[in-house]
Every structure is written in structure tokens, then in C-alpha cells.
Length: 247
Image 1 (cartoon, rainbow, N blue to C red):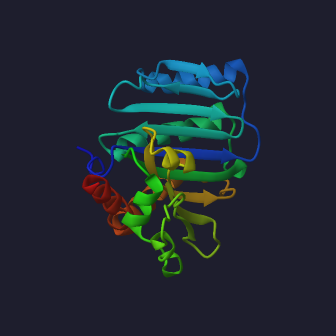
Image 2: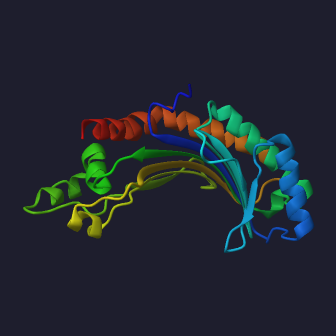
Image 3: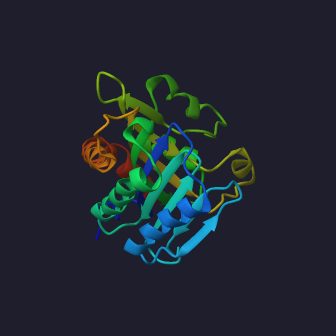
């Protein structure tokens, strides 16, 4: 069992490669790229084009875990939902990053940013913002606001980005995303939408001419998992999980 499976309803390991120049979108280039990925992952057989023109290939979503891949005008995204081991997601992301220089003509110079992101969805049908404020608390300047007579928390989405090096090109971002609003609170009718936590380690800017996208992603994954273990699990994920269990 994955070590993250007990923390949230669903978890996922995603990679995003943002480019400075538009990516190839010809029929031949797109089909050859997705076809090559499918050779390695034959269950990724659902291929379609979104209304906005993005290309997507994914496995069936009616199983506990599934892989997906998308090609946007200036972004390549790869994801694995509920992998039994994050290393399996890394293998998928590495394959794609090894293919893009040759099949999509993406060079290290063309890199705008490379991300490794761990996401966690919590099933909770209630006021997400109130739950977050109680589970994670607030800075002293905001602590007394929710205690005002008749006050109900309507928005509480903590977010912080930090630099991990002197150049500020390596960054980490922690974001909590809620999906309830004033309409839901007023009617006391909450949608069946997840409360999400995203933790991303991102490398900004062009890379060295001989740099490897795949090797750089492995470095980002290692840093992401290190910070998850040191801070995010105990300070964010566990308190949210415990607050939901107690509600």
C-alpha cells in the first residue's frame, strides 16, 4: 500500500513542463507522440481532444488508479492518480520527458518551468473553509475574526511559496484549495466536491544545453518528498484528515 494512501481519499503525482515556444500540434506529431507513450502503457487507450484544443490520453477512470497525459499549446502534463508507489509515476514522467526533445523538439533552452507536484484530495461534504480554519488555524492577526458573533468562515485557502535557492529559480508552493462558497453556506447544502492540498516543487527558467529533463525531475521529486516528510504531512495533511474524521 502506498505510504500516502492513509492520508487522503485520493492522491496523485503530476509533472508539468511549461515551454516558452508553442509545441507542435500537427496531426502527425501529436499521434506519433501519444502512440509512442501508449506502447509503454497500453491501458492508456482513451484519446480525445478537448473543446479548447488540448490533446488528452488516459486510462479508464473507473478503476482505483489511472494514468493520464495531456498536450497543451505550451505545456506537457503527465499524471498518475493513486499510484501504489510514487516511483511508478516517476517512471512514467521520465519516459515522457525523455521523448519530448526528439518527438516534440523541446530543448532545455525552451523550458519556462518544470514542476513535480503531489496532490491530495479529501472527501468532505461540508464547509471546507471552516474545516480548514479549524484544522490548520490562522495567524494571530486573524484568529479573532471567526469568533465574532454570527461569523461563518467563507474563504480560507492558505497558500505559501518559498525559494529553495539564492537565485529564486527553485521554488516550493503549498496550496489548500476549497470548493464551497457563500451560496452553499447560506443554503446549508454542500456539493460532493473534494478539499484539495497541492504541494509543488518547481524549477524556473532555461536549463543548461546538456541538461536532462528527466534527471531534473528526479531531483524535484526528491526535494518534494523530503519537504512532505519534514513539514507538509504532519502540519497540513494529518490535521485535515483528523478534523474530517472527527466531524
